[in-house]
Amino acid sequence: MNTFRTQPSRTRRLLALLLCAGTLLLAGVAQAATTQKQEDEKPVKILKGLASLSKESATCASCHREKTPGIYHQWGDSRHYAANVGCYECHKAETTDKDAIKHKDFVISVIVSPKDCAQCHEREVKEFDASHHATAGNILGSLDNVLAEVVEGAPLLNGTSPVVTMGCAGCHGSIVKVNSDGSLDSATWPNTGVGRINPDGSKGACSACHLRHNFDVEQARHPDNCGRCHLGPDHPQKEIYEESAHGIAFRAHMDEMNMDSEKWIVGEDYTAAPTCATCHMSATRDLPVSHDVGGRISWNLRAPVSFKIDEKAIAAGKKVKPWLQRRKDMKNVCRSCHGRNIVDAHFEQLDAFVELYNTKFAIPAKELITELRRQGMIDKVKFNEAIEWTYFYLWHHEGRRARHGAAMFAPDYAHWEGMYEIAHRFYIEMVPEVRELIHEAERNGNSEGAKAVQAKLDAILSSEMHRWFTGAKPPAFWRPTDSDNHGFTPKK
Image (cartoon, rainbow, N blue to C red; front, side):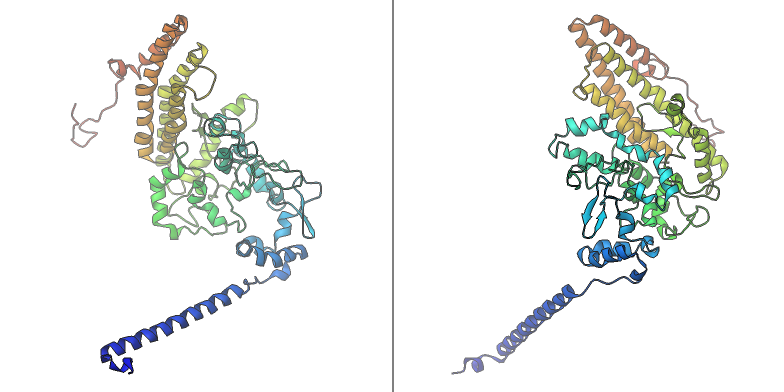
């Protein structure tokens, strides 16, 4: 008996539909496989205009089109490509170069250093070489590096701490080491840190900001580009910018920023908002583009105690751009969008804020640490005692947040994330820790040292800014009157 014919008609229809669906599914799978195979076999798009390249670069491109299509097309979208600058023009090397290697029929170097870029961009490299960015590699051997090498790390990567390689050097730059065969030491490469020390002796990496191989100027002008390194607890400029009115305006009007403009002059090519590059590097109607990112900065807001940016150089007998000229240049940027009275008042507020940080907390805290060390009440080993961490947080984390928050229009960072945290760290952690060390010194027979530190602490806490802590009257502050406050009188 034919069992299929004996099923109810509804069941027969269902079985027929299932058979049909199965057939279609198999056909779809086969078609997808065919399409994928065709896609896999499709050649990478060949860029037009390759005939204008040098013979060497055209040879490179013909191979890298297949081997590294991502790099090939990034370069194809770049201004370098439009200017007939190819692989060989940037990567060519002399046989005497430390990092020279034989690649196919050419002698090249993997690293494209500022010295290489200077063949075409001489002014930009000269400006960069004079900048603070170029010296970022000097962090090696610093207090920060002690944390990454000793406290957090161990020499597990060719004698180097992986924390240094993946953390510190990622932003600050590595000293690139070359192996005997010309290859690059994996503990120091890959690396695009802005203060990288290159095998040819040059400082820096242009690709820290102009990511290779498209070297996009628009990307370099974007705040996210700077946020790759300028973020986090000890230098949160990116987060501060995002909180500020400038950052809010940028996000709201990003499509009006004209960031791929050839000249990109604030006040002409865009007016919606400034970016990091606007204030620190880019052109105004009166100032040219500069690759010296510190050329418009008047205060050092990183150090334990802030100082005018030219102070140490002048003391060392060096001729540098005076801080007043740097401030004048920064004000020039500000006045592209703001009136002179607003600009001048902001910098007056900033100066007062930095002076407050210095005199109330930074200098007294430093004096206490110095006196404790002088009296042998803390040892020379870094970060093995609680008060060293307390002091480090005070200036390196909270202190930097506060000062940069004030400089960049971020009230929450100036107050709650900044000075509030500093005050808590000073009064509720550092002062009790100093008192405990005084008691410990007395117990251990170092009464002279204990007296010296106690005298220093008493002098600080009895001073005008700190006397409130012991119950004395704080200094007088201005209070709004009825006329100042439009008839509202605050409670006493």
